[in-house]
Length: 159
Image (cartoon, rainbow, N blue to C red):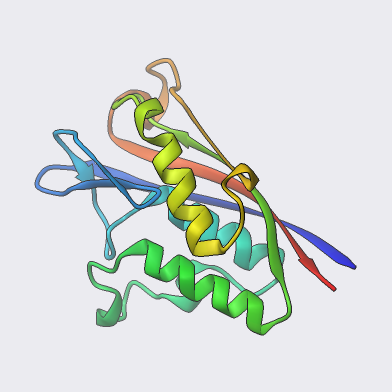
C-alpha cells in the first residue's frame, strides 16, 4: 500500500456583502470572504492538501480563478471533483486534519456540520475528518479581522 501526505493552505480577505461559507456551511456573520468562487478557505485548504498528497498540482491548476466557469462556484462541488480526480488516479482519502484561523466569528457551533458535509463528499466516515478552529489572539491579519485562513493535512492511500 502506498501512503501519501499533503498539506494545504488558503486565505481570503473578509469583505462586506458576501456570505461566510466554511466547510460548506453558511455561518451568520456581518462579513464574508472575498474570492472568485464562494471563497470557502477551509474547503480550499482541503482540496490543496489532497492534490498535494497525490502530486496533482493545486486548486488553481484545476479550478483557475481566471475561468468564468468557477465564478461563485460551490467549493463542495470542487471538493467532489478533486475526490473524483484522486479516485481516477487510484487514491482514496484516509483522513484529514484541518484548522481554521479566525478571530471572529466563533466556529465551534458549526464544526460538526462541516465535518459531516466534508465526510459525505469524500465518502469517508466523519470521524476521519478533524476540523479545529483557533484565533491568533488579535495578532496578524486574522487577529485584526482582515481575513480568515485555513491549513489542512491529508493522508491518502493507494493499494
